[in-house]
Length: 611
Figure 1: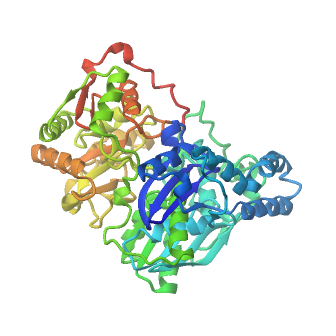
Figure 2 (figure 1 turned 90 degrees about the vertical axis):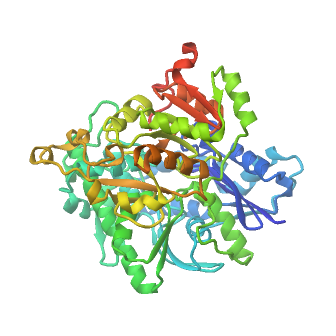
Figure 3 (figure 1 turned 120 degrees about the vertical axis):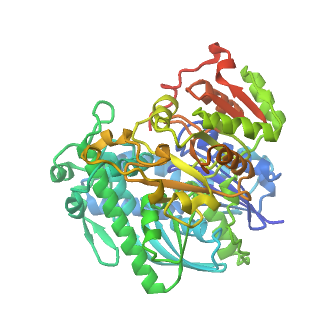
């Protein structure tokens, strides 16, 4: 038996993964254990979990691999500061002490941290380092259902690369082309995330969700920020940006171009201006991604595309690439951001460095991305009792029947079943569920349960066999990474008065038979559900369909704004008692909010730092 521990850490979204004989056994993000969103610290808890799940002590693990190369990253920082000198001195002075003390000697730092797991771990000779973008590319290609594919990776920045094209065939993978820092699509998008008042490396999906409320009237101004070639390659004009040398993303020249200062998220409302800005950068991002994918299809002639890196979480752009039919098939790594680097680094070591053969799974090798923690019925009941919860247990059929009744009566449900998901999306393991037919559900869930901005859309989980009856798409989308329009037959057309509404005023218009999951532009971020990936979730949606004729339910992550997705039964109970969820369905237990001790209610509105 051969085992590899993959680690990503020290930037954002630290995580750990374990492979046994090349198979993905377990993977989890550190944030789920520490309850600190996007936790970048050494992933002690995630490593403890993956080791325990695979019944291994650290001293029994054959290889340990880190997802990027610190020396190359240090070289990029130094060269950037020299190139922009003396502008970047403040940023340079802040960064250097940490690099000299810790990051430059990362092997030593990792070895000392790893020893905490197992006193018998004696040597650092089994610690390896992968390239950041190779880790991303490997995470996308090796678990994919393709024998051969072209892999596009786009994010903020790794060591030097910000965008890479690789070609994978069987167990080989080779990076063919790179765009280097400071020219970065991820950082361009993050600059607008910052400018519209959202948190960089966290709020990018809010910018994407805000875009349909606006009109892309600033598209030409966005394009002034960079030189853009027909093949999708680009160079950003650094006179508008501050991220290479400063402590902010944009500068005064950027502000003058668009005519306003960055929004202060503490005291400034989102206006039509911010919606139009969001719409403009989203449109330009989609154009770049479409041109890039079209040019690599023409150049390499390969029919399959894999995507990874933070930009691959832009499911609207992914949906457009699919709609353009540039590639025959697309597969996107569900943990496309840096957390997935832990997995990619391990897979790169197993296949590329060690030359191990690849067996291809026609679905994929991610096991539905259910790679995290799991709790037995006994463990669930023990934790619930310790928390003071009042619960009843039910047989399987009755549990499914009752939950589908709650949903059809417009109740908000906390759903905690099976293994936790790896990656940023809840996929029916740690989810909040609702009735998509309700025109109040989106607003209620946002304001009363999630404590977040009212414009934020929710995703539909739909039975795979009913997909094309409800949405204009007919490919598997198990990881909620593709956006498609609601089917014409399910739409409710807007009248002239409604069409003339601006911004958030559009939110309250019922625009389809499933308004809770229909965004203002008639789109939805679709998750397809099959029996073989999540049997319990599939049975619940099927029972809901039997009662209502609707094979779709609202699925959003089980957390509040600023909180990582719940991990333990105790986390689930705390979130249940801190929000206006009506029921918690956890394992075989059902908890009714009205039957809980009111003294256990929590004030969750201030519990977590806003994202």
